[in-house]
Amino acid sequence: MVALALDTATTRAAVGACADGRLASRTADVALAAQSALVLADQALREVGSEPAAIGRIAVGCGPGSFTALRIGIATARGLAAATGAVVIGVSTLAALREGAGAGAVAVVDARRGEVFAAGTGLDGEKVLAPAMLAGRLAPGTVAVGDGAVRHRAVLEAAGVEVPPDDDPRHAPQPAALLALAERAPLPPVPRYLREPDAIPAEAR
Image (cartoon, rainbow, N blue to C red; front, top):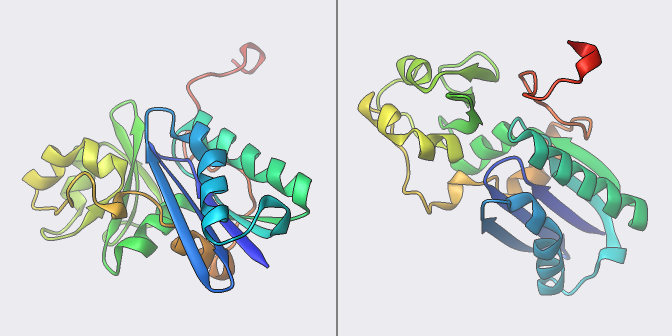
């Protein structure tokens, strides 16, 4: 069975395909990363010698992250599943970042509005915090990964937090981590926002 993993919750889309023990991964660090998911999936599938019709399982990052990108990524996974009969399994984007970064790391995703989504050592669950508040909760030497860590590098490093270089692969959810978490910590394949979206229907106001 071929397994596909994809996450578009952050500014760096990550997609991977696994078949017969081979794993091919692709990332795209672009402004509209979510729109690259299908192209990356096709490239990864070709590398492992497979095609979309063979996909049996899809692990998809469910955020938290960009509201629009999350919906695009999950819709992409569901669309592929509808065409192939694959099972779709949700995975926490923050958990995937931590899984790929190693023990003790903190995952930090840009939440816009001057806030970040974060989870890891020193935090109780997944949180929405101002960067300065997050920095104050982390012990010096803590490794922070994710696009939120990159964006707020100055604030975090001033508190002694270690942020890898911008091009470090740990700043994107790794397909291997997504697939592993789909086995150990599966979630429903629906967006996990942690915060109300900016756009609210008029009738809900």
